[in-house]
Every structure is written in C-alpha cells, then in structure tokens.
Image 1 (cartoon, rainbow, N blue to C red):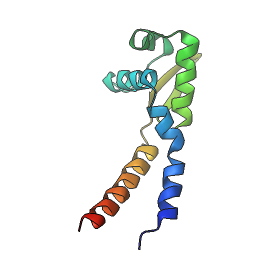
Image 2 (spheres, rainbow, N blue to C red):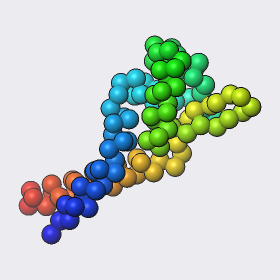
Image 3 (cartoon, rainbow, N blue to C red):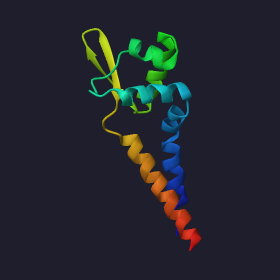
Image 4 (cartoon, one colour):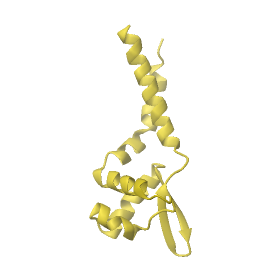
Length: 110
C-alpha cells in the first residue's frame, strides 16, 4: 500500500523549490548561469542583460534562488559571484518525488 502521507510531505518539502523554479525571470537567471562554462559564477551586473531587471530586482530573485538551494554565492573581497549549487540536493529530492509519483501511476495502469 502506498504511503501518501510520505508523498504529501515530500511534495510540501519541495514547495519553495518549485515556486523558485516557476518564475520566468528566475528561469532566465538559471539558464544564464548554466551557460557559464567555467562555473566561477556571475555577478549581478552580468545578469542584467539576461533578465532585463534592475540590480535590486535581480538581487531579490537571487535571494529566492539561494533560499531554495538552487544558487549559491562565493565572495571575492567585496564582490559576490553567484553559481548553481553543486550539491543539487533539491534537484535530487524532486527526482525522487517524481520517481515515486511515476511508480504509483504505473501501479495503477496494471
């Protein structure tokens, strides 16, 4: 028998991650960070063109992405460089959740 309470908790735990992914401007930031070949990270000014947002707006979106564990930051002196979080913990949680959902759906098909 399927433990839906566990599935419900997994879904709840992913809420902030899914909300962070759902915004088109944050999607543009993620894509721009993916395009960066050296993975050293980008400064807010480098994201201006990709998003057509102001510096404060980009910083706000980066904070949401950071809180959702999608983006991380490193400092060099007074400069901040943002990059995709290499841990990928939330992505792995989402993969596991989707695997469980597909498994339940496949059980019902047979």
